[in-house]
Image (cartoon, rainbow, N blue to C red; front, side, top):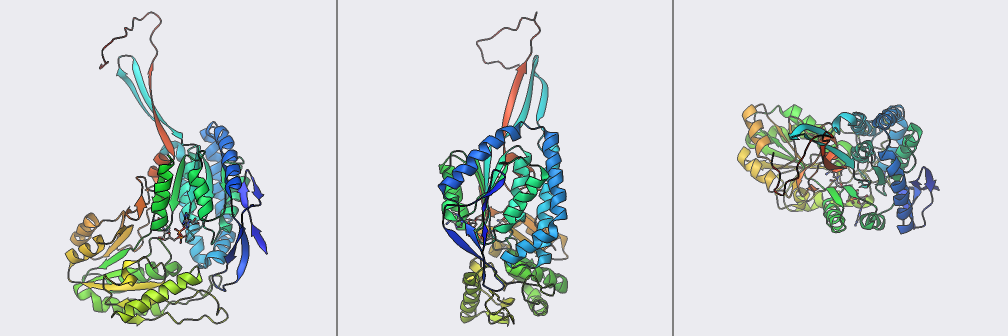
Length: 496
Ligand code: NAD
């Protein structure tokens, strides 16, 4: 049995804590055991990070970015192998994993330009003979706690920017698909990053709690489900840390009667069923406005029925399994409850088995029509290949429905009307909006984040907001009086 270890101070380290199994979701088989980090392992990682960070922050920007450029090239060169590592533990198709790495790598691209993104300001003669400048300095040791659904991309929203800004970064990846984190750690080492600047500690709640309580950790970036995001923010803040905690989602796509239904259905289907619906920007809810309902449902049915379900390693597969047996049960239970409460079954994937993979965690694309807001299939984040259709009379009713959700991550509208698109984009309570784009994940030089229960904290992830999150501002006021000049100190508050 392969053992996945921690990566501390440039080398693999055994954990003293208990081991947890890692499964192949396509077969249900245990494929590795994961060492979990206890307090001692977390202490060792933080101590190594603190030592390494002091030297790293004093390293020239030119040298820091040279390493990030090399890391970017190594990620490109190793994309196929890394994608197979992701697929084996997550279950998504290798193609989808390649896409994930590409979107994650965009943040490395951004961080290669950190010298531009993290420049200070300067004002000459703010007062007579007085200059003022500002600079942003690293927080110190920062931690990233990340979910299973993007084992490379979500951590990569964090570490390139944190490291580029001069911090040391400790990653606590999901215990469900942890191998990709160690792969990335080895790439950083090969790129020449000094030991201790990027480290990986594995585990679950106990490891997270040890990081949240550790006085040596200055900031925590979290991405995961809403209850844990809320917990991490509250405990992190109580322990005096800077925290950004991105939570769950329930993204709606509104389809207007003037939309191109075939186009909208193809886009929504890829948003709903890609990665088996396990994306924070997935589209589990289609809101059909007025006469859109009948043609949209017919087009969605045709799209869902085209999807080939199988193991992620098979190039013929469009959609892999969900992450655990419990996740599979959750999807099936919420679909069944909705059907019993009156929802119409358009496509039923609950009984799907994949030949040769009978113990895999598969559930087929499932499409339910006439779903109502009270049903858990709509209300809760199901995080699986379940697409619900709700019908509303007009755009105002659509906005009211979408805005009544406690989540506010992403949202999309499909329409040919600029007026409707503008009204929706401005009125919807969500952090990221797509117009005829189902998954409006911002490019890396903008920042990523939702509203309401989809994000706790102020700063969004990656892009300019990440630079602010991982740095502290300092304003320096300077006077170099001439030897002969008479600068008088006044007892009054100086104003000019
Ligand atoms: P999760 O909340 O179960 O786990 C996320 C992280 O928290 C993992 O590292 C896990 O080990 C840790 N964790 C789990 N339970 C904990 C506890 N009780 N105390 C402390 N730490 C704990 O999430 P998941 O199932 O891995 O990922 C799916 C969720 O992540 C979905 O809700 C999805 O919407 C969300 N997500 C959000 C975004 C976003 O940008 N908003 C992006 C990706 C995923």
